[in-house]
Image 1 (cartoon, rainbow, N blue to C red):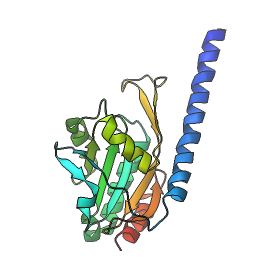
Image 2: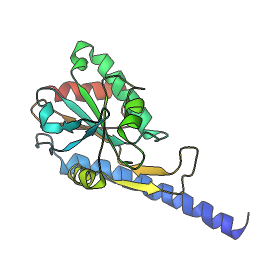
Image 3: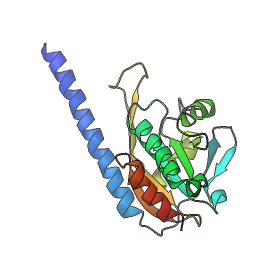
Image 4: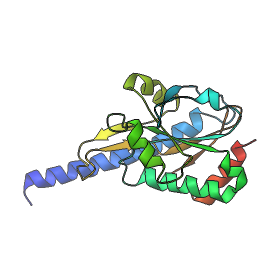
Length: 197
């Protein structure tokens, strides 16, 4: 391999390592900067049907809030599959639980794309998008790290490194716990149950 090829390979490795460290740091920040019992920051974005979705309007039932994108190759499908499994584990009690995906890739994730994507996992899941001006305060409020990774060229185009935390919000609009993409459906079901009180 040439020096240029080795330098490029090393750069890709370091970008991957740094992205992983930042994602882990985002989870730590979410757990320590957003303590259980704190009021979940309100926002209004656009749902997969093109309608406004306001978090505070969901009071009365619990919400699992996750940040990701439709072309995500690993973290997002793993997390959404586990959340769907967690809802099924809870049976009738899981039916009233909203699972909400907020995009970190608004340039590609329009409502139609999000609708197709979230329905792959559960027909009740909600996908949210908006302008950068609308999304940036939401990312800041929930301590969401996200960074376009142009080095991840594939059939899906560029990648987006992002936080993997799942915020669990009570029916009263308060934070009740934080999960992660590595949690099993059983572990997420426990967090869902805690958030219902």
